[in-house]
Amino acid sequence: MKKVTNVSLGGRNFTLDDDAYNRLSGYLEHFRARLTVSESQKAEVMDEIEGRIAELFYKEIGDSGRVVTLPMVEQVASTLGMPDGTAESGASTGTTPERPSARKLYRDPDDKKLAGICSGLSYYLDADVTLIRVLMLVALVFGSAGFWIYLILWIAVPMADTPAKKCEMRGMPATAENMSRFTSYKK
Image 1 (cartoon, helix red, strand yellow):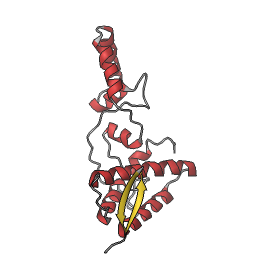
Image 2 (tube, helix red, strand yellow):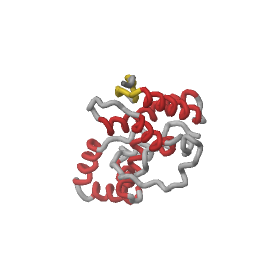
Image 3 (cartoon, one colour):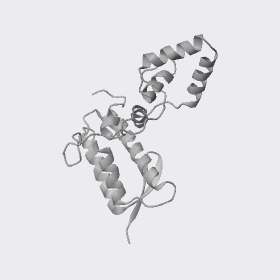
Image 4 (spheres, one colour):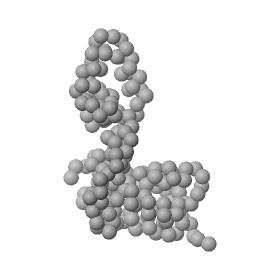
């Protein structure tokens, strides 16, 4: 019989067995210690990493009520890594090539002129943002369809408002190192 603990990560509740809880606590403490930013920025980064951990746990167990086990925590820790791109042991994970993940269509809040549609499309299609903007302008000038297409995309396409979504938009794996590139603080 194992002891279980209820925890809240990223606004979601999970039940972890005792070994998984101890491992996750140790990982988060080690992660926080390796951050090289101010305390207020550490809080923001830790909120983001906890949210990403919650997404990964939820993807694994969903609403089934299953208990998060030690192998699940180990998988999440190895997936996310550390903020400086190293493994927890200190060995660099940057030596192995990252496999690109599937890109998702989001509006880009960092490079927007109006709503971020063209910039988001340029990442999704792997095209130059200027080309996409020119094509949208031509579609707008030479027909009303361009206006309606832009308006529908503005309404339907979500904003990449978290570091994990910004990684997905660019086709990058949502690891701690990659997500740290898109937090609001600058190194």
